[in-house]
Image 1 (cartoon, rainbow, N blue to C red):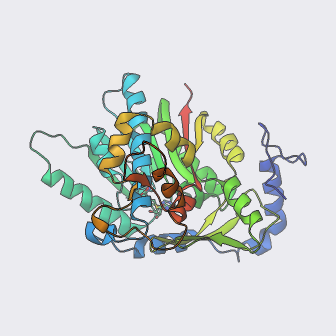
Image 2 (image 1 turned 135 degrees about the horizontal axis):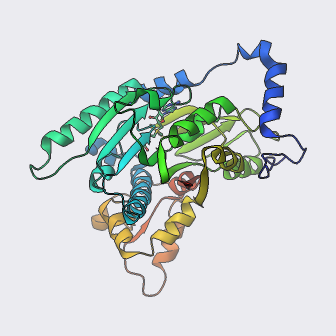
Image 3 (image 1 turned 135 degrees about the vertical axis):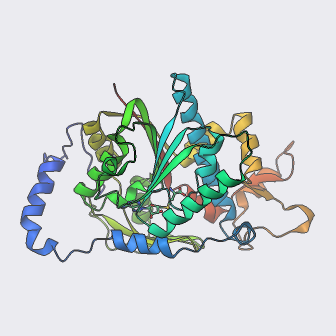
Amino acid sequence: MELQSVNDEGESPGGQKAGKKRKHEQEEASPIKKLVTDHSEKVASHYNSLQEVGLAARSQSRIFFMRNFNNWLKSVLIGEILEHVRGSGSRRVSVLDLGCGKGGDLLKWRRGGISHLVCADIAAVSVEQCQSRYDDMTRKSHINEKIFSAQFITADCTKEVLSEKLDDPELMFDICSCQFVYHYSFESEQKADMMLRNACERLKPGGFFIGTTPDAFELVKRLEASDSLSFGNEVFKVSFQSKGFYPLFGCQYHFTLEDVVNVPEFLVYFPLFEHMAKRYNMRLVLKQRFSEFFEEKVKKEHHRSLMMKMMALEPFPTEDGGRQATESTGEYCYAKEQCGRAGVKLPVGTLSRSEWEAASIYLVFVFQKMS
Ligand SMILES: C[S@@+](CC[C@H](N)C(=O)[O-])C[C@H]1O[C@@H](n2cnc3c(N)ncnc32)[C@H](O)[C@@H]1O
């Protein structure tokens, strides 16, 4: 069975409203509900236990180029949204980084010249590392460069109200950025709604809620095509507990990505996400698979040169007889085909097939707050 589609009223083809159906399910399931695991702690302890590795070790990773590719994609998204915000007249730009992790996007905010950043994450160790990265950045910055001010909050953003924790209780944001995070909230309607509330309630009119999350349709399509309960390759694996029935909330799968991720995640049924966002006066302005986003943005010269700078694609063939990221057969078929074409300058930029299969699970979204 395919995921149920939900119309503008949050109604499934069976005629039940998502909210009503949920309430009914809860009433029926309440004695059992107490036994159900809350996955937030698992997620927090997984991210807390991840070691911070240096550039040298990172460049040896099997998914070095895919990580750079994801970073490039976030840089382009963040850069374009900042342009919009500036274009509409905002001088002092305030940003909420929801699920900031170890601060992987701090440099992007620095380059974007923002004025204030609030970083929030459930994993206390990550928040500490994020803060010390920020402290380092300010300490080492040029005397003439004014680095943005920042606040760091450790909180389960699916349960706690972030606005109550802000140093400045009047603070309003131009942008909330939620990169590779929102899917952890789809464990239940309450959690998904609280994360959404945190993302949107303090946005200025015209402000943006941007992010990246796995595309549930793509995950289900690949699962249905598999003859087992999982699919993947040498870099990632997605395992479900069953197939054929996909509840709107709490549809759990286990995601493993090389040495980076090994956690339970939840399908985000996008039409429902979009419907829920309307409660916060949010209008969807962009939803694009990574592949579509890449194809569109790569046409622009400045995005391509950033791509080179960030090493977001792997050169094929490698220069000076070096090794590709993998020796497995069939991983560079596409690049080989390109190399054979007349007029193609070598090396070409590519991702190995396994990395591309992992990256192409995701989508980019942009919501805007209506005034
Ligand atoms: C894949 S990492 C992404 C980190 C960062 N946004 C980035 O793009 O580099 C997912 C992050 O979501 C955080 N997270 C998961 N559940 C959360 C929750 N309930 N509240 C706050 N943060 C959460 C994790 O701790 C982790 O840092």
